[in-house]
Image 1: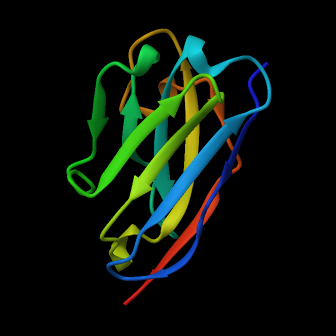
Image 2 (image 1 turned 90 degrees about the horizontal axis):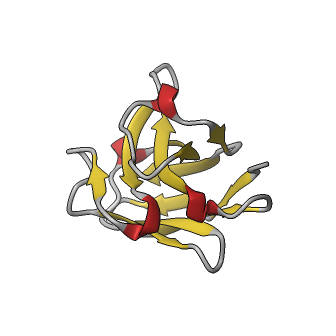
Length: 124
């Protein structure tokens, strides 16, 4: 069983930074590809970043490329999202997700497990 719990969200001014963490209290995350998604009010959930199993390749949405960095620490059973130079349009609930297998996906429907989300609010 995989139980994902996000933390690290909060209120930050534009240009600031936050680091989101997602810990798994169940089965080790080393068996899964991992991703971060976000959902703003009135909008659909969208892909943010993903990392393959064994910390292989990574992928980012164009809107966050060069500002966000995804990483994983399988020894700590966790995945992280370092967010720099935050913008008001980054305001959303951020979710981590786990997917069976080695390869990540940009499609939310292909993930098997989800956390409950953490709110990120960026003020202008």
